[in-house]
Image (cartoon, rainbow, N blue to C red; front, side, top):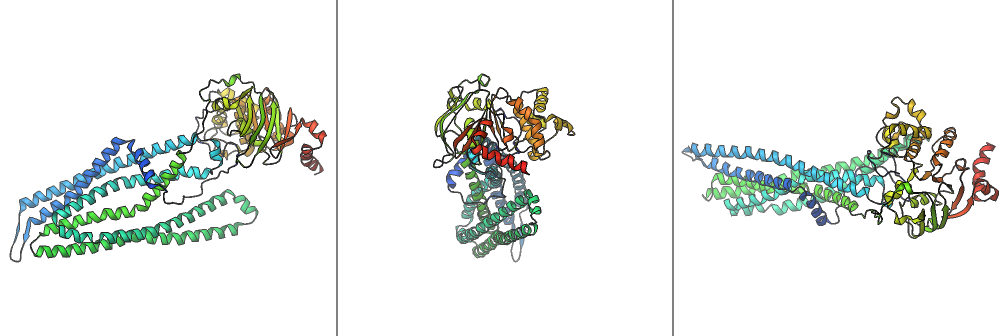
Length: 620
């Protein structure tokens, strides 16, 4: 089975069946408070540091932009102080006024330019950082063992790769410049306030504790409500997805009214929590404005008193009011973005959790290995294995398969049939015993080389975005068009493919849904034919094909398996009658073995299974 996958991401389900369950996305994730904000923040900063020149340029632009904002009130003060008005007389220093106005206009124009450049570079920095982060995460996921994907839902992993990374992206683009600018603006505004009037500065700072207390209280309450809103939204999306997927079942059992009632209830909960969350979330701005206006009133009163005593000028009061606004506004902005920052850190933590998983190891990766030299002798020696340490799936499992033999595995669901396949391919490693390929322990062979000489046709077909030709070529990427056509003929797929409007160039829709299940299965068989592996695994390969189609492909399957060591997992006993040896597995042990006729004569497990399938159908 080729490891050189150059096609787009798979649209189908998981590869091999294992103990875990996959699933589609279930709506937006619930935002939780990060467990270690400091550690996560440091790792994010390191990713930002990968684009150090962009980051340095952004910091310089933010500083310059903040300086222009701080310089504005200085020119305002000069302009006002160049106008003198008394009860009996007024005078204007036009030269000073014009100079101040020109300086003020120039500062604001430069500030606009800096803000534009700051936004442009900030967006580029955040997207570049997220691209690296997403690339690193996807690269790590591609190297994780199958066990990780079997024990984590696919929807959860997709959410981390998409939703969580998008959350980090949005936060980076919004908060990087805001935080840097806020720190510089608050510091600069405080310095200028102290420079102009220490007394008024003390008055202005009186409202800061009130701002922090109120904003913290509102944010705490709104965060709880937004969490409930996200939970309700997740339930709603999950309900919608289930109902759309299972619409035929809902209609068949006449459960439409019940489904609609459930939807209405979840929707009502979402409405309730959304209203409350929006109300609380929307109050922080007005409340902060009220508190800020109270501070401005106190500043104006104290400034008026000081001006009446000749201690400061009117221009100083104007400049001070502007600086006090610049001092409180960043505090409000940071308070407003607190939940966004917490959400982003939580998302980044979830991303880093995946990236910290231990990748699949292969001690024999550097060992030379030529799949063409493989004969196909497979031996299991006293193999014991369990997906969980306290529950064995295979117990003292031993088989000796000669090259070219066809071995069928039958038994009840959960007996361990698919587990045998998972162990041959080293998707999982055994707990004890040995598995030998041509006399060599498979743990001594490179995993990539081992898997390249194994072809798999799964019960759950996996098709990829692209044409039918691309999907068949996935078995061997260097195959010619003629080889693809021949493989399709052997799999009995050529006839239906050529009847399609675009033939082999037909584009497959999501999960190949524009084909029937049987047609999708035929494509996967053609893919295995093209790969021409030394070892062939058919895991319920004909389960989705109707009886008539199954009869037509039996000869093709026999031709496909000719000269190959074949493992056939099947519930339909009609597909394994000509197997060289049939292994009946129950409870992780081989309870019967022999060919079809021998097992029927024993009148044991296999005979009972055969009778349940054929005697009953004949009676019908």
